[in-house]
Length: 206
Image (cartoon, rainbow, N blue to C red):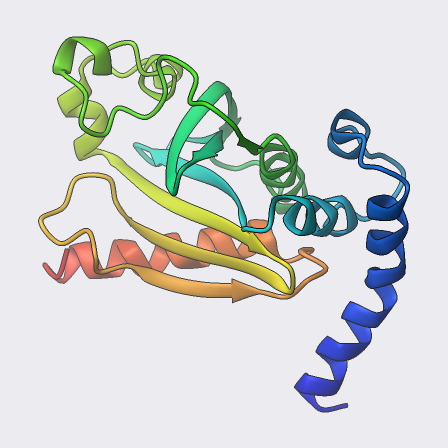
C-alpha cells in the first residue's frame, strides 16, 4: 500500500469518531481522561476542537531522566504549565509514549498560568521553574548545560518532533522527525531525535 493511501485509510478510520465527538458537544475533561482505546483518537479530537496543534515538551536531563511537561497556548504564544512527569532514563518506550500523549491531552488554549516557561523571565523566577525543580539540579546553569529538549507537536495526521540542546547558540538547528498517526512509535522516536541532537553537539554544530 502506498504511503498516501495508508494515510488516507488511517484518517478515514479515525474521522467518524472525531466527528461524533464534535457533533455531540465536546466534554474536554472526558476527552483528556479517555481510556480503553488508542490515544491518537482523543488527540485528534482536541486538534479539531482547538484548530491548532497540541503541544508538549520532553526534557532529558544529564542522561538520567526524562521530564515531560504540558503546554498552554494563547494568542500564538505557548507556555509550559502544570506539574511535569519525571521518568527514569531507562523507562520503557511504551510508558514514555503514554506519558507524552497524556501531556498532549492536557494542552490548553487559554490564559497562561503563572509560573510557566522560563523563557524571557528573570533568573529569580526561573529558579521556580517546575522542570528545573523536578530535576533536582544544583543550579539552573547546571540544568541547562546538561539538558536536551524535544518539542512535540501533535497535528491531525501525526506528530512532529524537534530536538536540540537546551542551551545552544543555534536554537534553530534541530533534529526533526515525524511520527505516524497511531503514535505507537512516539517514545522510540524521542530517543532517536535525541541521539541525533547528541551527535550534532559532539560535532560542535550546536
